[in-house]
Length: 114
Length: 112
Image 1 (tube, rainbow over the protein chains, first blue to last red):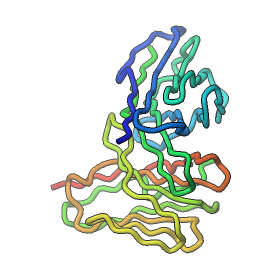
Image 2: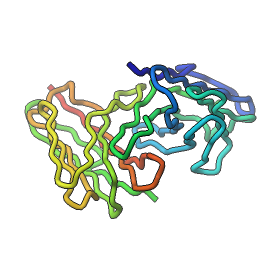
Image 3: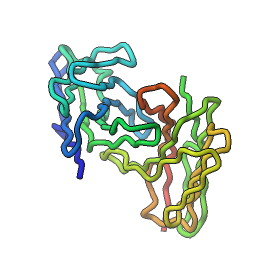
Image 4: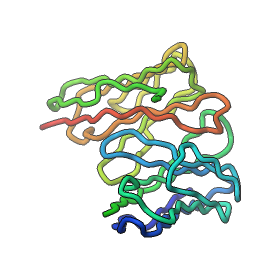
């Protein structure tokens, strides 16, 4: 069966510090991968998606970047965090088979920038 | 601009009552998904609907996809405290690389 991992689960960082959040998927090959950010109690905003190694598409201009160094690894980064980067970050994967396929989410990372 | 509009934003009911959450859009979706999310956790898939007019049932939950594939509803019968959570609808538009467009969510609270 497929599983998706995210770490760390919780992170508190000062403004101006770097960021690296990691997401890995097990049990599937060549998935589409996604990074979302969620404001408290609200819907999800798509930040980045990837259809393959080294292929990253950005949905919104921001202080963050993403990379996919391996097929099942997706990393969210920042060189200098802003207060507005605080939020709940979710990684998701999708099997690349058709419109009915579902996205499966990781447990998320709660980021607080102080 | 949010493609999917959920209503209501918040719903508080007593155990045993019924509730319906709506998800509406002017766009056509290839598929639409409903998730439930607990605080501090990732969303968990409840159902995926792909055919216009489709109705799916999951125990006390009934999901309907509109005939034109632009809207959906989630109906819970005899709600229980365990149904409490944030309900999110999300749709995939054609030729979007499977990208999900999320609604803002409906917070449901079921009190004993």
